Image (cartoon, rainbow, N blue to C red):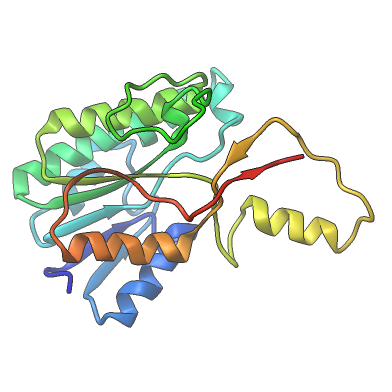
Length: 220
């Protein structure tokens, strides 16, 4: 059983909804906050919410527009939310003695590996989104706060905007679909990831972990 009150950041997101369901099923006390109530691009906003009242802070907020991050006008915000904001959140957690759970992505790597990446594999992002997430990871570790860093990939759920739902909806309205054929990944259920997160927390596990569903998929 997870011990302590939980502050959940990014409450309206796809993963956060799965976390809310999982925490409610276990009877866990949690306070859910979302933008603009808590703005990861605003250090004062972060400090106002991370006060020591909660033993665990789960950051399920992120800039997820991979293509949008390539826009020079948009990248500063992506970097603030995924990078420097995570660093500030980690520093606040360290000051108050809270445990920080943060989610990252396989985009911190170059995608060229022929076998699963190790958790200690050096960062090698090839796009702006990956660089922003790698920055957040680095600042999290450098902060010295107690943390659980979970990397995952191709997240989906019965709700929210995700690839699985998009293809499902398109397949119902079009006889033939055209998609890219050069992507490989492991589709991962947000609900499975939420339960895995609570399982790791219940065992007081820290550090960096790769958590995905089994198997892999190629878009063809």
